[in-house]
Length: 321
Image (cartoon, rainbow, N blue to C red; front, side, top):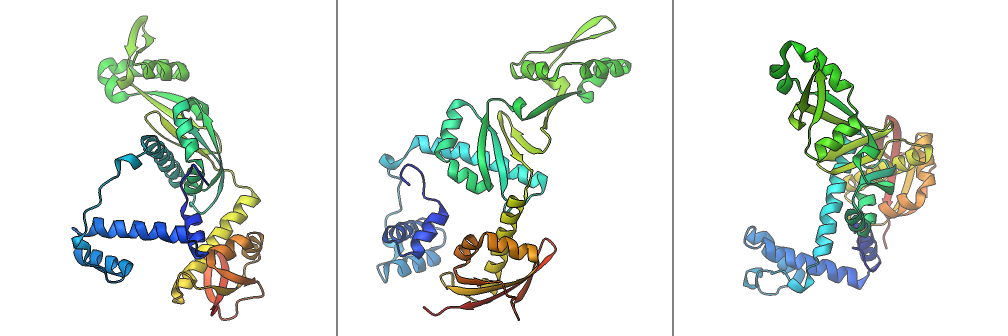
């Protein structure tokens, strides 16, 4: 555990188990939030502070929090910035591929320098969790994630070449995309020959697009690029269904008016494939929903739900402990 941040699932699990350090950390964070909110939401902040301190003087008598310069970690801040950018591009790739975050994927591939790899490695468990992928792989250049396509920019080249544009388009199509990408990255031009004359083309004259490898979804911005492996096998699909089942059960808990800490007995019924996924990941389903017992003999009178067009019924009973 030492050397990396505690993720939210671990913190919640420790709090559920009555871990004093976890509660102390949460208490300190909430007190600090109350003080930060005080100038902006005075009544909410005072109520929060009163609940946390059990009647201590008003939060408005406290000093405004100031950062502890000795506690600042510049390397960690840099690593977090790089990790957040990786996650942002990965989530954008998911959005483009129309794959929910609850569906696990096998791999994410990241373009990263040696320094960036070291930074991401420090927070790799967090990156994997946020993107919901099993593994992270690094490559040195974006060209390893796909192939470049070069097209002429007609808005720039049209007025310049006029009726000769078909010849320009053909000449651009004959260029080596890798050579063009390298030249433009270095800020140099590339040459084409039209009617026996050489013409130099710059970055404003060409459109360079990186087409991802088959089966991958790619997102890039400047020198950063992230690609997701979209292939789904039966194991990944079952895990994705199990996560959807947990989401449905949590909604049923909320509808039933259960408190966050309430333990339950859970009975599921419905589609065979959904029930098979719940059985395969029963420890995960039970742990996330605080179910001490899970049965699959049909949820009579349970709440109906639908997951990817499949029917699921959920019956739950709060346990008095």
